[in-house]
Image 1 (tube, rainbow, N blue to C red):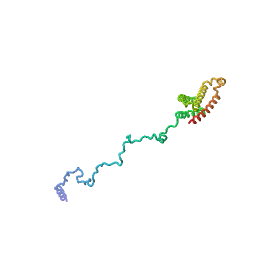
Image 2 (cartoon, rainbow, N blue to C red):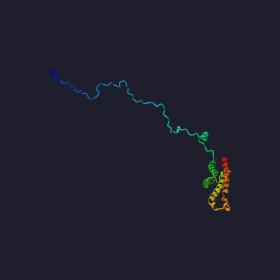
Image 3 (tube, rainbow, N blue to C red):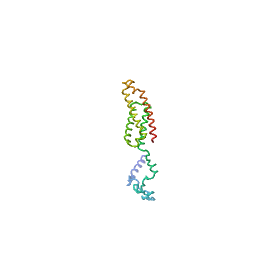
Image 4 (cartoon, rainbow, N blue to C red):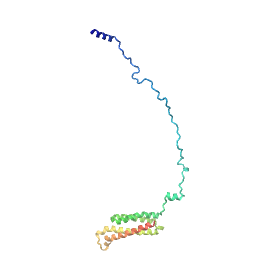
Length: 207
């Protein structure tokens, strides 16, 4: 048995070693042939397409712009919305909120300072209109004369209230101090309120 094992070892050593020859294409990836993927496909070239719309005319061309139909009464009266009021009526309408503010001030029994501030603004506005329409037909309108009268009276009431605030603590309610009595001032305010309401009606009727 020993001799048999030795014989096998000698026979194995005597056989040439079968070594694998190195592959020249090893490490170079796939080296076979690939199918032609472009076969059956046609390359598409960009084509000049015609727009589906026609070229518009130059918008800035003066010959293509139609002039506004200013001779057409419908265009002038509806589209342009011409002002139908005279400058005088516009000025009167601007005064109405000032009168309404003073009226609200009296009704809400607001402070003397607030009342006098609103009266001062009204006085300046009426003085401006008096200069504007001096010597013109508007100065003879009843609405304008009524406004001037009211303006004069509001000045006197504002002055009375300011003086009462200043001198009332030092004057008795007799003699000169009687003018600054609270009851007298309230009577003047009530009368002024009535005058403002009447003037507002007159000014609105002028429209």
